[in-house]
Length: 574
Image 1 (cartoon, rainbow, N blue to C red):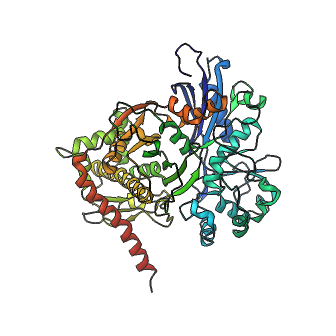
Image 2 (cartoon, helix red, strand yellow):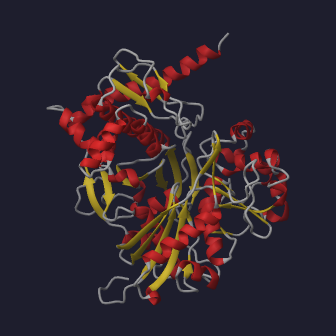
């Protein structure tokens, strides 16, 4: 598809995130021509229970799809690709929603990815030490599907479990809704359901954890037809779905991806010639895609399987066909930054000043940090303030959901800090020292320390991956947080690696469109499509002169978790 005179082909990429559905119209060169988004509902009926509605999400998909194709010749639309969070959708045998809550509200039929209700169940699963666990870093996460399924069986037997006909990962629900085909994506099943690309399902695992009923009927409830991402599904878009979405019936619909994996697909294959990067001329395995939004995911690929303790995978062909994927992660990173900023006493003042300047609160904070740093580098403002960011447990590489957030400072402690007692039930920070003042300067520095803590978490994941055998030289960032220049610069400075940003900032949507392009047959492979549809926009290099400072802060960062575990051991002792 090289040649400038050929007719333009379009693909629709659809991304279902935590709080909204987004769609884009993308051409065969990866240029984003139209964009639309629509918020979706979330429910939190009790602590650690997070739910959504598949009907609400599909309705939002229909809204954004119709918006992005307005005024376009529909005959030029060649394919449709979906990505979504790895949330669990439950339907009955007639494909009707079933309740995943004790209230019996069937409209709320999705257990969200970030739901942590199944703590007891995942603990029991991990105690089995079954061999499938070696492919999730040795320890299964509470955010995966097996513990959630076990929770449903043990807690909602009559209202949900016994009536269920289909358990879908959300990306697979969307492709089924579009095509009527119940085939699952290899990405979803391998990454979140313990499926093996080489061996298929392991009967002994499901029987060992108490979910033997899923083995019957050849795993029909959770998927017995599995296709690689980008494969064309059935006969394409059904007439009913075409009418809903405002798209031509019969266009190709691709087997889907999890949202982070779509982001990886949208950035990791870009041509980097002429940018002075170490990864130029090196295999794509030297690149790490970091998809940073509500949470952060770190996607590294290898030609051979690499087992990294505390890091998910290796998963064969789960993102890029023919390559093994390791997936590190940090839970609720974007949500953590919001929490720290919005819970501070100076937040109303920040809101007012940002509004007066017609800026986002984060653009204002970035400029305020530049104002108060004086002659020193901005990162040095946190010399006395250190944050451990795992306010929702550690996903990688420690794989410990019991960990809490920590903040230390060299100033007198104030137990009356509003931040320490924020009403948000999501987080329960451990505070070991706080400043008495609560002005805008303090808020800006706390925000900076939180961003740095997330970058230190990325460094910890990279070190674990490299210790196991990965060789990484360059970071490729995408997602909402990659639009924040402070976040990007801190990741470069703290990891010591250059950060590549895509020309199209909506890389996740480009990744979804790559799937649609592959399904259409316009490209011979996913690798060809991602190479031709992703381009470098900007490269941010680390400031190596600040390395010694960040190495010191990293030592403190590691001490924080060491001390937290010591405190917990003391309190649990006799």
